[in-house]
Length: 142
Length: 142
Length: 142
Length: 142
Image (cartoon, rainbow over all chains, first blue to last red; front, side, top):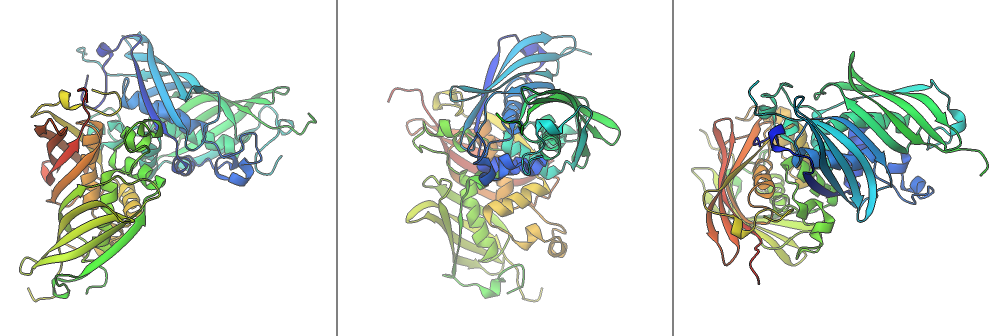
């Protein structure tokens, strides 16, 4: 394991798993709106959101998904996601704690690529499922 | 077209396209690190990043992808992405302006679903490609 | 007193005191997590925090202490803290208003240094105590 | 080691060390000014800062010190600092990468307290030195 950059391909095996959890705050929604430019009314306009089936403002799907990014980068296997496929299953509201779980599904050792299954839950509800492909380092001589 | 929530299914046809562009700033990277919890060295440690092939800090892939979220939510067809598949092609640095283009590929009228092709570019370089599935509203009587 | 930089050593005497107060918001905690890189679960994960003796997320100790920095820099005697010793006495939660009080204890006139006693309270509870050493300017000819 | 909260007292021994590094950005300085309320001219007014010996805006000392907070909370031994004594040695500017190193100096096993030596460097320059006292968990039966 390299000190800053997470696991090398030699450190990984199918079934390894890690979790990172974070409460989505109203501030996160504001900051994500600013950073992404996504100012949709369903995220930033409480009066409008109250008229939708959600009844209140919800987090941007990609904000919720970004907790996966933290699980990958901080925990397993490290930075460098190159592919993401995520299906949004349920809305997340400010105050919900999103728990992102990533599990190694397959290693492509020559290419130093790792397939991960990803799932985000809020309590017992699955809010996002998907997969990610991450390029990692190697200690093998080049 | 409804005033806040974007296009209804009746307003959409294959080939419609829209673009939203945003410069990714160093502040966006800091805020995204806070909102996502992803503090990987490649994003927040310039000295480490200088030792990588990128040569400098890069934006979180999901921050870059979030500009697609803005194109969808602000322009075409409106909020409510339920599926995202994105492949990261090239790194983005603070100061790069990401241009997200979304194009309607297919309408599933009964389900009020729209498939979009998505592509993000920085100048002439494609940095992300993918697709998104968005649920939209309808003016048809229920 | 210089216009931007606060009191000169000639303006200060033991016993002078000043207070600055600020409500710690959930947004401050999110931003501090981003700026510091400190994403500990006790600060960002409400479900985890609920299992601790604090019962809810608490502010980073150094965020609370930073209100002292504001009292010193904005009020008395001005910027330039070179020494800080702070003892955390009690947790601070989002919504708490931290009142930082600084009092001049001693002047080292030749070195243009000022010792301050510092205390932060939330209502009647002391949450931080400590001291700070600040270098100030002088109008004396060099 | 507990999954979210870092090392227990049983996991620690004198000499254990950890490092966390982060580039201080202009955005961090802005955000810290907002979160702390410390809007001193030396941090936020480039024209004033140019007239000081620093020649440009510098980071708040407590912002720089907060990288220690991240090293403690993310790496060793986990959250819960109750005492901080830090001496500012040199200014930090936007773009500088602060490397916070914490080393276990002494364990007070019955009280579950850990004394850490702390040092922050920018390249080879020491910018902060100090110590911290952290309360940790225990797996011993109560």
